[in-house]
Image (cartoon, rainbow, N blue to C red; front, side, top):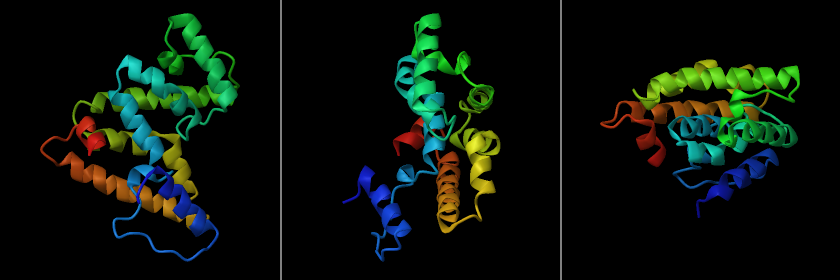
Length: 180
């Protein structure tokens, strides 16, 4: 059966070089580690303030920002103390190292720019995310480093095809893409 656990299991088998076969449909693109930051960013862009409160820790600790859990919790405390909402943690850098602060600020700027395209289509929004997010640069820079890196880049290419298809659909919205 396909489920959230299957992607990790198949990657572990591949990493251990255990021969296996996957069902024809393969693993869901949403379960691929390399696509998760993009899906998380898309979810963030269409989320309400309450939904952002639930997403913010994942945004901070995922490949999007790459903060340690301790640094993320500290930032959440700062945001809550100042605004009463943890969902606004990307607006603050108190208590972070210079590198961590730069990562938070860069992702906040990219998400702000992507938000201007979010009303038009998932394709325009993804294009901004792909061009500007640091995790995209890391994927490209590491693309030839190993079979795993190539597999991750391949999964993002497949994800971009799905986004392009959704972008030309009757409802090209991010919400429609995420619900499919």
